[in-house]
View 1: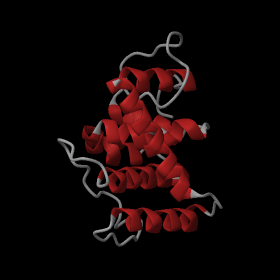
View 2 (view 1 turned 135 degrees about the vertical axis):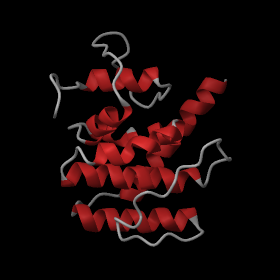
View 3 (view 1 turned 135 degrees about the horizontal axis):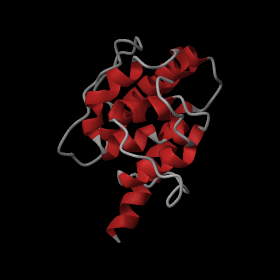
View 4 (view 1 turned 90 degrees about the horizontal axis):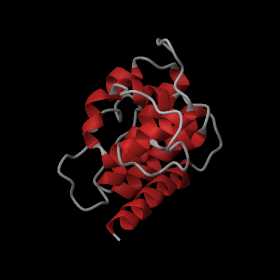
Amino acid sequence: MNSAYKITGDQLANALNSLGVRFIMGGQSHGTMPYTPPARLLAALARSDEARLRLALIPLFLEHPEFAAHVRAAARQLDRLARLTLQCYYTAAFCLQQTLPSQSEPLPDLFSGELNLSLGDDPEENLRALAERHRELSGARVNWLGTYQHAAQTWRKGLEFRKA
């Protein structure tokens, strides 16, 4: 990492909480961190050793679509596997956003070309195709579709909780 300090899991959770992304439990009072530029935050999440922090990228993009402007800068900071995580989780958020009531700022399709993924009009089919491509590129036998859906479902529950 090109920084004087490593961002801890608690600090990442604090940063997410301060942005209103209530996806990660913990890290709410200690280990605070000064403002972190969006590209650095995205890169730190993508390279985290903790799957829950990497997965928090999806709700972060759903909650803050303006972070799309910083994704390419973050991707340039990452090794191949972390970059793949960022690209796939961003693309999952792009597909998932299309299933939600319209938001003020739609996420642009930034990575389908780089992932060699042809996206159509059906967001659910696009998500399935992304999951398959993620499996191929990562070599990990993970239920990526379920992973993406879990992130979106947890984020939606958090929204409902805040509204109540």
